[in-house]
Length: 128
Image 1 (cartoon, rainbow, N blue to C red):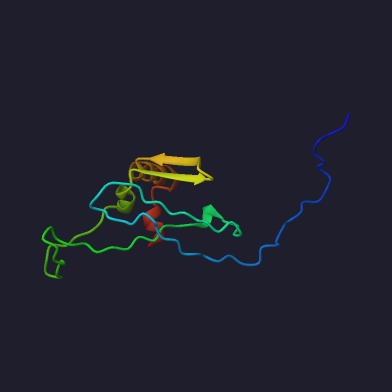
Image 2 (image 1 turned 90 degrees about the horizontal axis):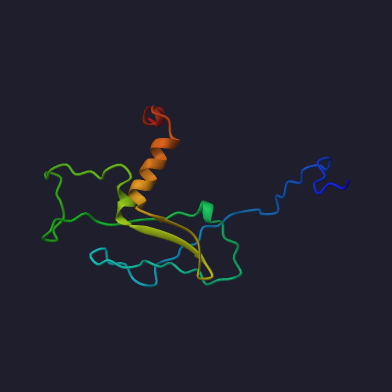
């Protein structure tokens, strides 16, 4: 009988990737948090090898009052809830060639539940 897998061969460890570079991409649709709509980030360069598991979103903004003025140090203390930035998005999709590879809805709830399940109860104490 012929086996498909030869377990006696040594494991090959491919270390041909010498370095990883992070590239910056911005939304081509524009970003206005006061309006609902899609934020799309397209990567057109086909000569790059991408590693989505090491990618991240960098979010930068300013917290302002409803009249547009900035908060001063004497104003009431303001803080963002745990995982609060994920509540800015209702859905995220990872597409490759217009085909949906993976997608999530309700990002705030989904990532909070994942964190509660994944990290131990004393995680916050261990990190400080």
